[in-house]
Length: 231
Image (cartoon, rainbow, N blue to C red; front, side, top):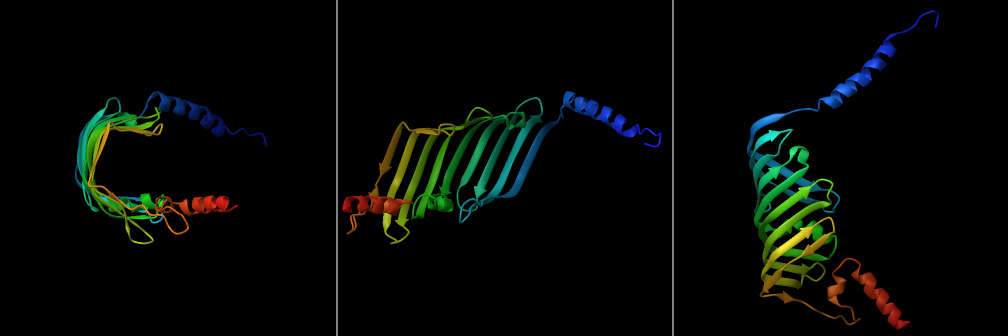
């Protein structure tokens, strides 16, 4: 234009691919001998549920040999404000491509997980605590999380939300040789032992079973079945 040629855009266009090529040839490198977390307040809130699932607590832990070209070792311990502790010891590959850990939980209060139960049933967690230990494995791109181990749930009491009556209870449930694979999803257990179980099984005057009614959608299924019989 007007006998002038602008060289700046052309030069910049030539330099950008070169920069991108150099960046691709030189991935970011990092290395730390050790990272320590003496005490850190943490909180998790899942707003996809109503009410939101909320967990909080205090984390302490450490990691060693953190680098872009090798796996790091770590240990972590969380004391939950809602009750109970969770700990893990293991290794994590660079970029979290792979995680292998020994995990353990002690006396984790189940009332904190009421929002999860609300999704599927009209039940209220009155009491209960979970403890267990096992091995956790995660590999990116290979389907998800795998967990193997044992689990115990003590002093569980579930009440019907509508009536307040006890629906299900036990003194102790022990699950041994459990295996969970979220890629399936698939769950298996070698042995399940329940001590001092108790449950309420009731059929109403309109022939509806409470075991069906407490679960979300149970009323609609019962009413549909009753309507088909009446027809």
